[in-house]
Length: 149
Image (tube, rainbow, N blue to C red):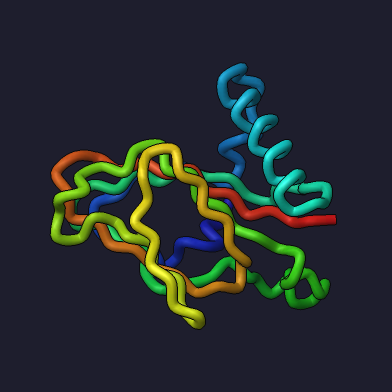
């Protein structure tokens, strides 16, 4: 699968899923996580949810996700920008004492989130965002892009 989102975005020492179908598995633990996540999103957004993409990133020291958003040409062509959301689940936040502890920066309007383990951050997919990490222990996130309907 072509790496649609991360071309030019992911930099440095990072491991990431090889496709955007991380949650599309029959593994019972991942399936339970997916089902719980979908139920929580549906309740929070008061809508049914379709997961378009799911992935993981493991950040090592010196890695970053450069300034980007998750709206694609197909979203614009179909008029789905307002229905698309991105979510980051922080499995492990890594080294919080690092110079770059992996704060999630959202732009216009500007917000900075200093996540804790287990935090879930949901934002419109059109929000530009970036993060940098320089810690000595690994940091792991699960991300999804989803649509309401």
